[in-house]
Length: 187
Image (cartoon, rainbow, N blue to C red; front, side, top):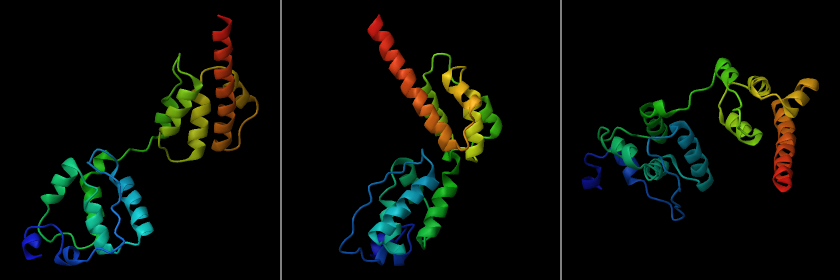
């Protein structure tokens, strides 16, 4: 342990903590190119599921790091990581620039369905845009649709929730795709 502990970013307590007999490596990977907060949350969920102690969580979390994130870890000061909370905080701070920024109301209002973009592709692209709330997303989605049956339906009978907007869009996605199939058959 002394040879391993010398120069290692983990405290001696973390390095000395025995792995449980039921230790199961968590199959997650973080290389620094994605949102570190999401990685930490996913890891914490798995760590709770497996019943890892705080000290074991540190060692298991290290096994998820690859590439630049692993290089970053090994340049930390010896003994500087004393618990999982500290490890997660340092990683999140280091890679905070990879965090997806929330879309503002104006950004969402500027989104538009492309001229030849199917309703399915546009709704899928729109859903992926993180934002502050469902009301903003619902209004933005309706406003950004091309003129057509879906937008007309949503204008005539307003949906009360974002989920209802998405359900209505799904009906019109099915209609759009069915009509496209019939058009191919008629050619």
